[in-house]
Length: 210
Ligand code: VGL
Ligand code: ZN
Image (cartoon, rainbow, N blue to C red; front, side, top):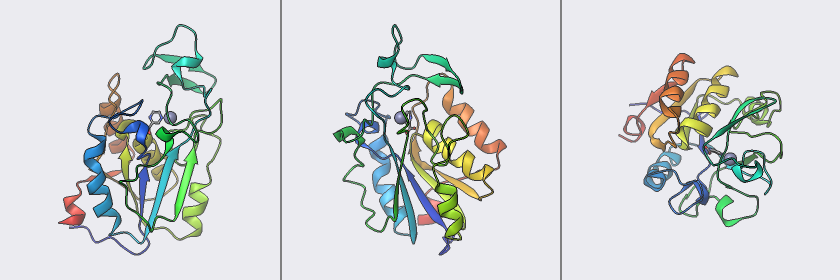
């Protein structure tokens, strides 16, 4: 069993309607992790929620690229970009965090992906690997202990957030059964390999909840 410490923080990634069943970029089984996340959150004094938050003409949307379909890729200045169905457009219903997420003590809702020309899977920095969100500064200023990451999607926003947390010097744990994956073009196997290589710990929710 793992004892959550007062300084540890739970980062709940992108539990928004567009990533849940019925949403425009629905992650299979995304709704199944809601009760787990609610239970886990009760163990943490500190919780941060991230919220994917795009303008309607965001560069990651396939609809912005002639002849391109969702899940195809293009080459941008900052590297390969997977193209997505329109999702999490700011102020839309799909961008809202699910009302079934009951974490009244969450202290920060961090929006990301609001710059039209840069995607942002990670809660720490945008896909250009230069533009910072401020999350590392926030966590450092609050003397954060270990970072536990849950939410959607395991192979994109969860993985990139965990990897950047580890690169920033934090101890990071992904609670595997409190995530679900998109899994396009081998992205899930790649994500687990990257996380393992970066020294990100992987556990199950029972290791905390019993
Ligand atoms: C995500 C694809 C595009 C995620 C966000 O939350 O994992 N995936 N935008
Ligand atoms: Zn997005």
